[in-house]
Image 1 (cartoon, one colour):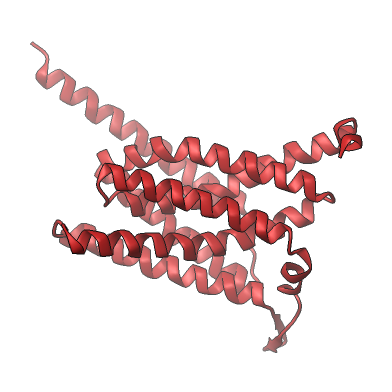
Image 2 (cartoon, rainbow, N blue to C red):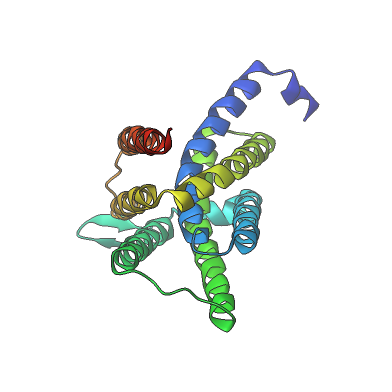
Length: 242
């Protein structure tokens, strides 16, 4: 471990891997932020903290089961001459889950939803935590398989994952609050989920869509929406000005 501290290649690998893990964590932050936006503030905070803690636990657990994880990329069978493995199946199922969940949330936003309280609120909290666990598993597999291909030392992988999840935690609160107080951004975030779902399904089918294209589209759309929000706030400020 000490020899890694003096190795510039190790530091370069750590910086590169950390940046990659942070970028891959954007998907997770968006998904968790959308889910917890429907909960009361205190419960939303608990669900967000729990979701990111589970993300960290799953990623580190996968790192210490590298033999099993690498087995996920071993061919199970072929379909039309294309090899299929467990990683493909997990990504495909996760993509379908995001498509279904995103579509349901968009429908709920358009049709309107009733306020839940009491036992219904407790059930909603449990369901949201369950959904966070499912998607955490999917994103963790994708994240750690990427990490394995980018670094040789497990110590570097663990440190990179911890830093990335810490950044995700710091970003999740502001992102959640922004989505909660700006309904139009929530619809935009849901469209991001659909886009990510399609990308995961494509990955599961052996067709990799470069993440740079996806994240550029997301960043561009978010930038346009931010301009709209600022313009709306400016108009409202002028209305209330004496």
